Image 1 (spheres, rainbow, N blue to C red):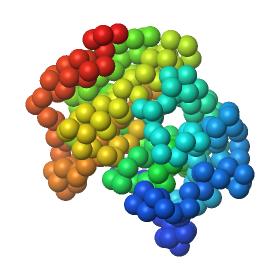
Image 2 (image 1 turned 90 degrees about the vertical axis):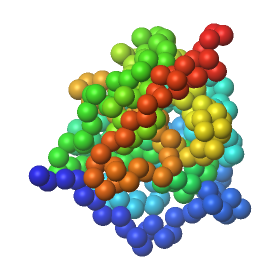
Image 3 (image 1 turned 90 degrees about the horizontal axis):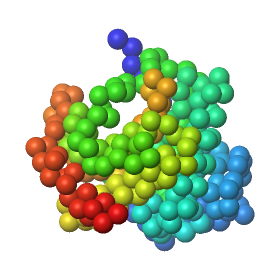
Amino acid sequence: MPYNLIDFNMQIGRQKPETIRHPDNYCPFCHTAELTDIIAADGPIILLRNKYNVLSGTDQFVLIETDKCQSDIPDYTPEHMQRLLRFGLHHWQKMLNSGRYADVLFFKNYGPLSGGTIRHPHMQLVAFPELAQPLAVLPEEFAGELITRAGNVEFNIATTPRIGFWELNIVPADINTPAAIAAMAHFIQTGTSFLTRHFHQGRVQSYNLFFYQLQGRVYIKIMPRFATPPLFVGYGVHVRPTNIPDMAAEIRQLYFDNE
């Protein structure tokens, strides 16, 4: 069976700035006057072409989330988070519908174990003109133990995780209503706040945020990053924790019981 294999240009990769492990290094996203190839902006939210196109054959883009370098999603006002989400979804959908690409990945790296290099809050879009086969995403990976539901959007913990252990899912019925955007933004902020401030007593310092379009629907997954289970790395065996209901109850108690 063919699978998607992509070359990572190491010569370009060695030139990329790094501020996660070396916070005193120069942060290009803090110096907006020096940015080039800007595609669109909404105040401090900026979409531009990635200067370091390390993935051969793709078009790479960066979505700068804010002008506050040391902040992150849990720190944003609800208004800013909704504004960011509308902006990101709009441009992602525009690329998907352009006819230029087989698929477009939309995701965020946060922390030293996430695969990112820049601390300044940002997301990425990677557009593939062609793929050997469709991306391996299954609808059942977004079903799970219900945490709560609002604005026709479900927030759950995956019972069929893509990799293993705890994965948070956000499943909107529609992304085009103000109520859905508000619920999605709230759940993204809740999920990232829980993982970085409460989960494992706040010891999780890395996560990924992934957006998917599958069978005409949008799905969102928040995945804490720590050592990947060896059963998955070596054999593709997905590991499911036995305390998923307890974790769902904890999130409800911390974030939703008093709403």
